[in-house]
Image 1: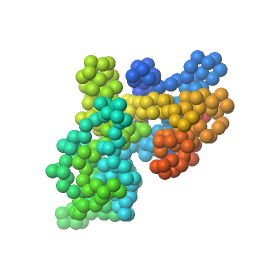
Image 2: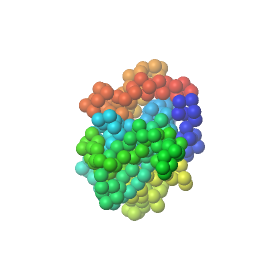
Image 3: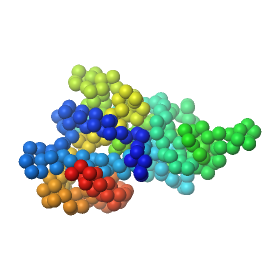
Image 4: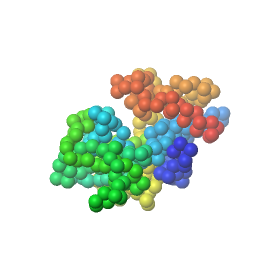
Length: 326
């Protein structure tokens, strides 16, 4: 749901299709955890895992009804168009894999040109993120949220045409305006977040391709999507009408790859999940730690990258979903 309105992007059918794939087939021997044979709490372990996943997804994307990352980072009172390259000072094309996994990551193609499928929807909200070579976009400016684009009395008449149901705003490339990382172009910047938990960066897209996409097929390994090259078309996660489960699959892949295997400084996700259920499912420290891992890459926030965004909301989402499931 987007507030009290059902999401148009994330639907139950896609969730179930994605979950079935990640439970039955999994990826590289890893599966979305649905519990164990414990006669008392076995099924509750699985339900709590689902609730944690959906609770985080609600905060990340579902409440915004967005598959592609929204441009939301205001810098110097403006929304730089180069936010596509990374927000809050990040550079998504530099989100590399560890040395031993470099063979999995995507190559940054400077000629790749993509326009996001979804976008924010508030009044004057920035248009869809986009990327492309400098020959196509020599410089990038800002999204001017104050511009009154609907002006039928102008000569010639003006209309809002950046996206459907747009009420205000426009792309303004009249001058180069940097994002927090100093970028004034969008070359190689096609790796913004997509899917229910915002798959981001050349490493994560590369792993999707390595395990589930064309890279696996080219290597002669089993591939769920042998004809989809997530490195050449990362936008397919949001744009595919044939495989609507991809926006869920991408998030579930992250969950089994990064959450279910998380084991840092004495905090192990699977052990803590079991402790949470066995302890009566009332200890908020579990979901707060999960929120830290998802949002800031550590289980004991505040982390080096800052405080968790919406920690209380994430905890409330988890409680709401867990109550419904149990």
